Length: 241
Image (cartoon, rainbow, N blue to C red; front, side, top):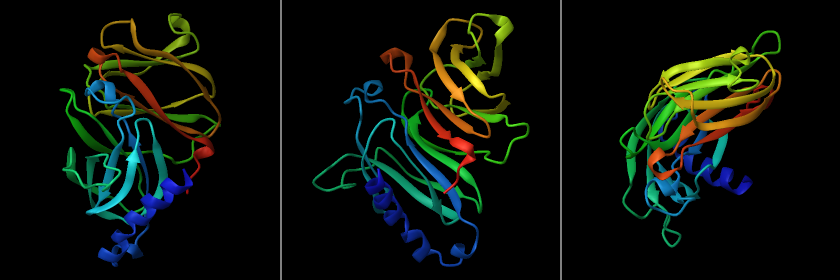
């Protein structure tokens, strides 16, 4: 992982050279997520890809469920493209996603994820993440719908099916939407169901949420290929780079 971080950071250093004025502002803190299961697009399950930034190959051999970062990156607009993996010439094949222009704001916490649209096409999205301190040792849960699936209702509870111990996080979350809630610490079950139903399409996934933490849950995959799943990023104690 240290080697991966070094490769990505080196590839993104071109931003500082291309835009010296931006380097004087507060950098953004970014995690990069691979959220496309190969089974959803008829490829190998880990679907290795190469990621280029501003034309430079930043992340070769990036695999499904991998998360890199958070990385401190200069604020401004970057051009990101995702290519089929090519070990002999990384980033040498035509892009399957992008190039897409993504704007990073000064002092922003963000996540960039390669995922599927509602129709099942590969795409990429950026989400702003709230990592500000919480009160009373509570923690923050973000849920992002990045799957080729209909709208979902997302629950977090101590015992799914026991309605006295189950609470909604968000109702009717659609593809490319995100939601955030502040929750007490403890052992929880995360469940996603198609909106208006109660049968889980994801979970129950057991999550131990400690104090002053932030969890990012990315709903990924597609129901038609039985690849619906959750990719999780845990900011323990709201850690930053």
